[in-house]
Amino acid sequence: MLNDSLFITVQSAAEFYDNIHNYFSSAWNQAELLPSLVLAALVFVLLVGGGIFFMRWRASRRKYVPSGILNDKNKVSEVLEACVDVWAHMDFQLNYEDGRSLFYSGIAIKLTSKELVLECFSSPTELSSLYPGREVKFFFMLKAKHPEFYHFDTKVIKTVATKKDQFRLYVCIPSELKPGQKRNFLRIDPPESLVLGSAIWPYEGNKEMFKRPVSEWDKPLLVYSSEDSFQFKIRDLSANGAGLNIPQEYAKLEALSFGKKRLFMMMLNLWAPVQQSSLKIWTICRVQTSVPNQELGGLKVGVQFLAWGQIRNANTETLVWRKLESSEGIGQLADWIIRRNLEGNRVHTNSLLMMQ
Image 1: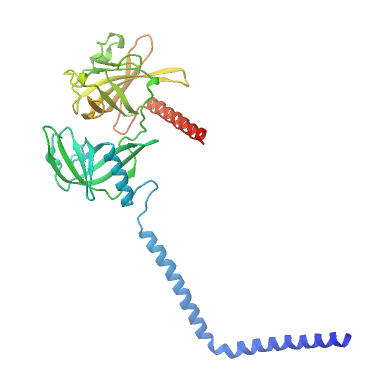
Image 2: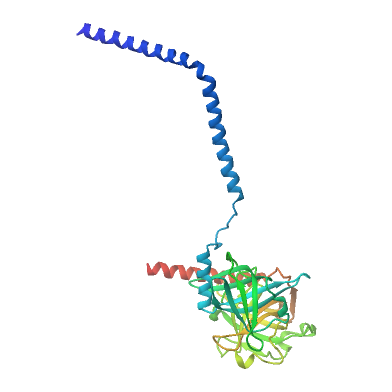
């Protein structure tokens, strides 16, 4: 047994020595190939490095697509078809060289593979501005479980007069739809139970009425009350504007004339549940859009807030006014809207959880 173990150990040592000798002998014999091996290694490194550089260069040239943008052709068509199905209201903006930006409105009525067609119910004063090739920016909202706001840039194909003060606008299908709305602030349909009241007065720029207590003002022309039948209704509200529904019998009041570029005053009285108090705000409004309401009759009027005021104290009922810049909103109103939006989302989420 001992001799056998010794023989195996000696044999293993001999094999180990032979392996080392063969390795170094092989390495020495291949020393002549060293320059070729180095050259091959350099070529390999250059190829890998060049490939990495090319991939990064190519990636840097790709257009960055922010989250939420729809640039798939089929998806864009799907959203626009949904607009046509519900006759979605769309606002479009024209920019002029002198810095003006004017908004007009239309309803999506037809979609083909190349064009979107809108019925415009109030002809712009400068219809000639909608010439073929003119760039326009569109804004629209789709209502599903939550309102979805989009905007897109496109070009005019043509305009065709249909009836008096009506025309059809043909525009190119956009390559992409971007999330976002015309206003810089969140807007919601205010819950009727939280709108304690609202009122509208004509305004022609006369500031004398601001010096008098509110209780001495003339009777408002239109009044909304959650308890009575309404003479107008707030259909959406943001910190710097609102949308109103005006019934047919009040849409043509001579003292108001809800045409574009007209001014009026509006008071909002909103209930804040958390604070258990009302938020009362007076605003000076400028009409931005005014189109027929196809569902309810009357008019859909879009307004921008130019200034706002609140009562200085309960004893005087005198308003303190603040002018708003185009990019500003009413801070207190913005807070109220954000709270209502969060409450609405919370209720929607809870209902989904209960369904599960």
